[in-house]
Amino acid sequence: MKGQITEDMKSAMKAGDKDRLKVVRLILAAIKQIEVDTRTELDDAAVLAVITKMVKQRRDSIEAFEKGDREDLAAIERAEILVLEDYLPERLSAADLAAMVDEVIQSTGAEGIRDMGKVMGLIKAKAAGRADMGAVSATVKERLSAL
Image 1 (cartoon, helix red, strand yellow):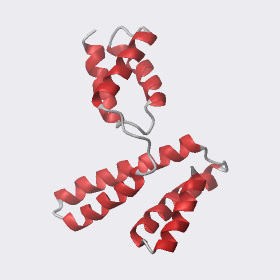
Image 2 (cartoon, helix red, strand yellow; image 1 turned 180 degrees about the vertical axis):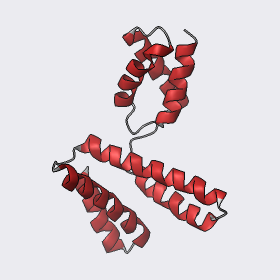
Image 3 (cartoon, helix red, strand yellow; image 1 turned 135 degrees about the vertical axis):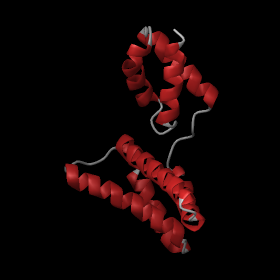
Image 4 (cartoon, one colour; image 1 turned 120 degrees about the vertical axis):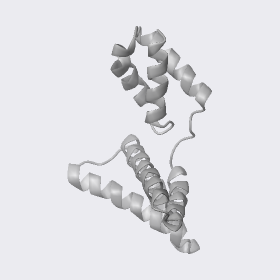
């Protein structure tokens, strides 16, 4: 995945796409920073986690900018999210997410809300980068409360 991002950086440079180039460089810098800090090479799952975190940060920034009536800055963040989402897998639909939650609840034998950690652990691995974990948590809590 890092190779793909590097190639995209080169393509953006050649095409003169400054906005895309800026975001791709931010991704590479974030990956490099973590690799230097941990002295390890990030695999695709870890790169995906970095990009997911960057999207979440931008969503939080958009919310703050909108509260502060800074629509110009919120628009920049939205444009960056569009570039970042190119590297994320396709998002799960609400129906697919609900089916995944039900499947994991059955496979773990979860009996109530106290089993939420066990269910969330498995779903987090299956839905990595494909679903907002806040929405996943709410769905799991709803399903487990009904048991």
